[in-house]
Length: 90
Picture (cartoon, rainbow, N blue to C red):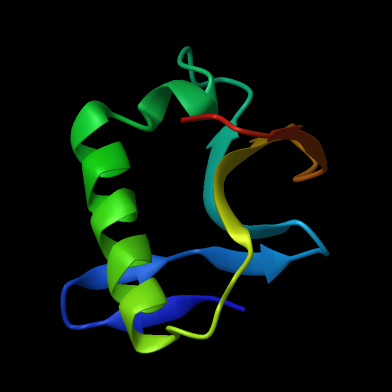
């Protein structure tokens, strides 16, 4: 699921036994010269970390370690996507 508050949103929050994963999703067409993951700037990283902190404060019983991932989707001309999942991106 995603998480929204008045300060912004996190695209996906997921979990497994060990981690609570905060994930940023970026999509680009294959004509775009910049890979989607490269559009996650330092200011975006800071914002996601702040939002994750707010989420964890509201969910203080959460004991799993936070992890920050990036999912990149590159669409071809038929709108078919190549998906890459980068764990521990930042």
